[in-house]
Length: 343
Image (cartoon, rainbow, N blue to C red; front, side):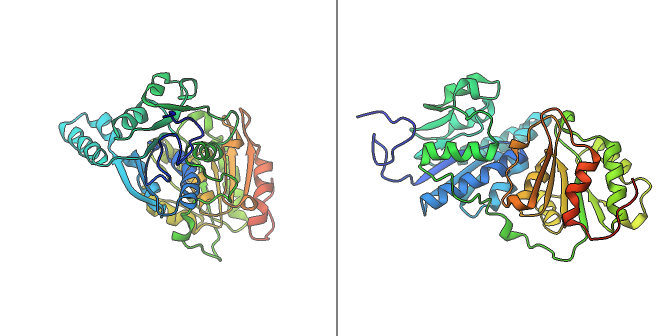
């Protein structure tokens, strides 16, 4: 019997004619979860009736739960174990792993391919595990030892396309289908809103756009009739949000309290425009088919894949953030036609 190789040939090389049950391992982070959704849509379109389970860090579990083709989500409390180092947290993690191991999969597919995802992939029960090559495992080459087959990460492509091409190699999908995040139908849009959401926070400081530019942009947006919303995830982001709206008319800007991810999705869906750096909220807004202006600083704009390209603008990137005037001009098509504030 010939051992299977990539691309997998279902119905040959000892593989069943069609995969019945697949485990997807994409542990983190928020943007990566979003970028994986179109590949899941591709799989569901290619194999109607397939059961797709998803292993994910519990902090981001609401994202895969939104996809209608995902059968079960294994929400692993990895961050809680790391932070709390308690027996209760370990027991919780063990219970999720036990539930995951209760099912046997035709395939374990790990488009994350770092040590923590490799451990989960190895614990899952399957004769076939596929991940990236050692040199493509995010600086953790030992992760590659968990996989029986290795895929070469496409160079210089955004995460959504890379995952769709990877899915093609393991599940014979069509990556040329229209990109479909499959979550926008759950969150209705508002036609008359004047709200502009400013996604100013990011996981890494090198992704941030200067606060002074956010302040100038916020003042111009309010002068043109927009109502601003901002949120925060930690004390530093809360302080920056307050700086951005400082001096604006009291009713023109709102700093939201910390909310669940599902609550934030509903907020984003109701916005006229989202302006944000390379962060999860920016990617989520694009998946929800909202107009988005994505501000790239250290990372490149190739990381951004909107559902509707006509509703998105990407500015800056690869070490050079966009200037205020470029962002302001990019925003004009989605703002009320009122006189702009003086420079």
